[in-house]
Length: 312
Image (cartoon, rainbow, N blue to C red; front, side, top):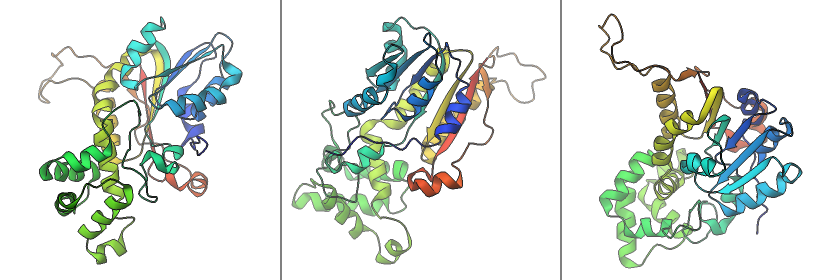
């Protein structure tokens, strides 16, 4: 089995933006291998506390090993970050000084072929972030209607060949179920004209992204959880979120803006009468991007964007 590793994208930038208070309480909702977590823990005093949440059991094991020097301050929880409020409450924590979310798929998940996230190696169609979940990518590929597949690939993969890819998937599975990543890649290739395939990156990239997002409900979870996480912040506390594609980034940007300016009064009103007050401020007017050095060291950081919000 591959060693659990995850190059922590925008590591220094994220920790700097978090403004770590030595006695503070911090949460990483996607702790992964513990890269961001370790840098936060290094800045904590003996009174500081750190909570790492991840739905991937292998990530929790890796984070435990990496943070072994800080066991008195660290609590690791196998759960989805959508349950952050409840999980912290069970640990008698009502408010925190900072939250980190790194929404990327870990290098381990991509490189460990058996997890079925990668289109570069043959493996069973899986793609579950939480392996306790029963539904897999295979169920989506073989069970969704052509219309459902089309909407999923169009909306989550932003692939202009979505309709044709969905049609080819349905046609292929009528002969026999699509069970492996390689079989799915071949179906996708057949749906995209050769000329286009030569011009763009891997033809399966966008469809694999779409299936992963759908299976793990990534955008719904983010949309439904973000306001609750802002609620958890103490005054002056910050939430730092790293996204890897435009769909996630749009959600984060819009929800941060709504929390900074929640007023719903018509623009022609001379004063606000809706009574909605700002909950904080957007720290990053434009997202923080990886440096040239980081891009050279880790090509997977190419699409990363960091946005930060501070609670009033």
